[in-house]
Length: 178
Image (cartoon, rainbow, N blue to C red; front, side, top):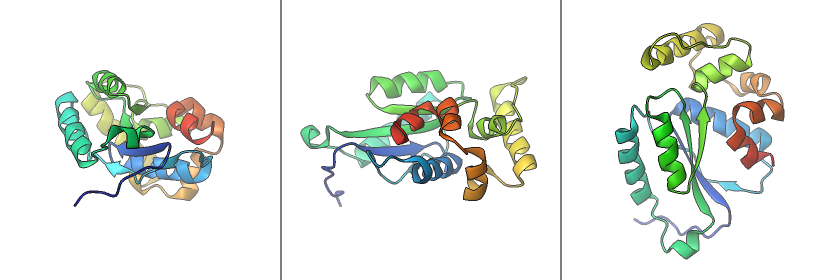
C-alpha cells in the first residue's frame, strides 16, 4: 500500500539513530518549535555501527518513503539525528549532505552531550566503542535511567533555554527556533 501523497510545504521527516534521539527530538519539538515547519513522526534507525550499515538503511528508507513525482515533494526533506562518536560519523555526514538532506550530530553522543550540559563532561580516553559504553553507564549512574526513558520534566531542566539548544544542537535550533 502506497503512503498518502504529501504536498505540504516544508515537511521534514526525521530519522533518529535510536530511542534516545527520538526522545530528545520530540521534547525539543514540543517545547521550542515555532510551527513554521511541519515534522513527520520520527523514525528509529535502530542503531548504526558503520557507514555500510547506514547506507543500507538509507537505501531502504528512501525506497519506503518514495517521494515521487519530485515536483510534488520539493519542500520535503529528511533529517538524520545521529551520534558523532562512530568511526564513520564524518563519512555518514558527508553522504547525507551530498544527498541534500539535513543532519544533526550529537557530540560526542546523546548521553555524553546531556551529561556535558549538566556539568559532567565526558572525555574520550579509550576507543570509541568503549567510550560509547562508558557514556551510557555514566548517564545511567547520574540520571538513574537510560537516555530514552528520561522524563520531560528532567529534559526541561536540561534544555532550559534556547541558548543550550543552539550551543549543542544547532541544526535543531535552526529548525525549531529561527
